[in-house]
Length: 74
Image 1 (spheres, rainbow, N blue to C red):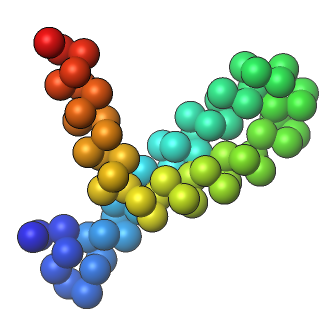
Image 2: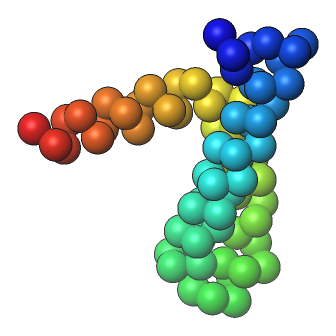
Image 3: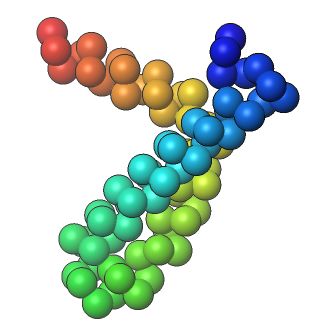
C-alpha cells in the first residue's frame, strides 16, 4: 500500500524504473538484432513504444519477473 500513497507518486516511480529498464533492454536487443548502425539509428523507436507500455503496466511486469524467477529456481 505504500506504493500507492501520496496521490500515486509511488506508482510513477515504478513507471520510470521499469520503463527505463525495458527501454534500455529493447534498444540493446535492436542493436544486437539489426546491427550497430541501424540499431542505434532506429532502435529507439520500438524501445520508446515498448518502454512506455511496459512502464505503465509495471505491476504485471514485476509479477511476471517474480514468476519466472520462481519457475527457474525450481
